[in-house]
Length: 259
Image 1 (tube, rainbow, N blue to C red):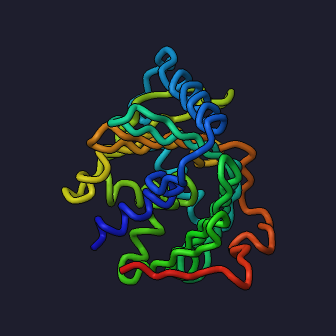
Image 2: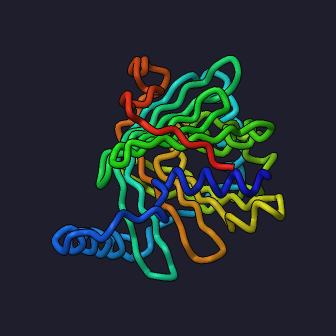
Image 3: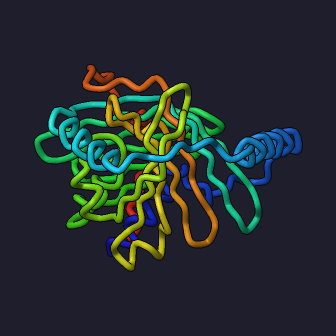
């Protein structure tokens, strides 16, 4: 059940890339191909410079993350995602905003995808809702007993403590790498659970040690597919928009509940 739910979360966070629209106009298709080519070119640039980590760097970073997790309440950021599918060698790019809120019951999360196609994802009170304005439909799923696993996954690099990482992953510090002008700790997480490895071979986090937040995340699958997320304009423990976790539906919106 956990593996199936995780696969659903990964799919939703990627904007349900497998749900292709009807035949696109030739101009739109060419534009998409150009965007994919640009993203792929960017992802194939020269390997980044990673300086070696000191013997105590990982230990100190995990302690910092523990301390920051105790005071974490909210986060919001702009994001850009690259979803690469190895079979067709195609890269889709999506942009939007992310919101996180720690409550007395757990972690709520909301994603507003603004380009290329507007969509909304809200995970609140253990329920995942995915809204596609283009077809005016909301798909809802309940996490049930897997709620803690979902919240832990969605808080990776945003509110997760060092102890949380070590419970579910073998954590290795690959070194220090500069991202957007910030010296970040590059962490490689390898899932401990055998079933989880079937979906994710590893996760790479680029952590800003001053704020214990991820500036980048990369989720790699055994198939060769991956999702690379870049975050900017990150704000922590500030006031979130009042409608951050509300879907902007209409009176005619259709709600579906897949098994």
